[in-house]
Length: 106
Figure 1 (cartoon, rainbow, N blue to C red):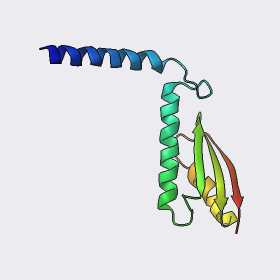
Figure 2: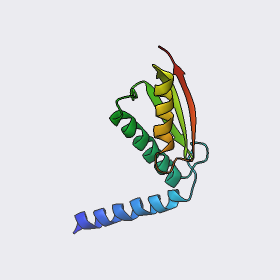
Figure 3: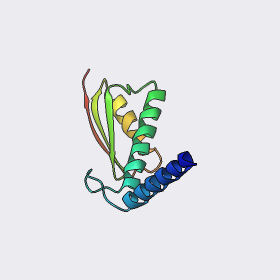
């Protein structure tokens, strides 16, 4: 019985914490928890698409997302690789804007 009481108390505290923090901002540029989670999902989706595309070196390109804006950085072997990386990011669901700072280095 005590084990169940402890589990219920933990669940209530965890639930209150989640509800209390979803409306609050976190330290990352005053971004809400919900939008931070959305941005993490966008970043993951862009990286996954890049990993599937053989014309883009996903390990050489960094992807960061803030409020739906995707920032690409790193190095590409050609202008076409740089353009393809931007196209992949642009066509990913929920992306509002793409900033392509990839440097072409042969």
